[in-house]
Amino acid sequence: MKTWNDYKEYAKSVDMEAKKDIDEAESLAEIVGAMIRQRNAMGISQRELAAMCNMPQSSVARIESLKTTPNLDTILKLFEPLGLALTVSMKRV
Image (cartoon, rainbow, N blue to C red; front, side):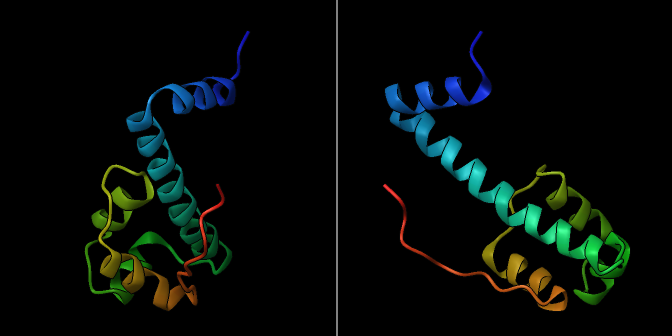
């Protein structure tokens, strides 16, 4: 039986559009995951983070559940009170 990672790698090797979509989804999940881990480590609720960023709690919830893709300015706004920074690095090929 194949694993999800096996299927994912196969799909990425045969379909460039699927590769792009999977890579984007994984990148977003990594960014949002870091935000959630830091928020929890700091003991801050979604409601508290939303108040610090002057946005509705429901927006934070939708971002954290990956129901919406935040704009870069929204990510930076959420990262600021969490003491996080977004960095850019060369893509591994």
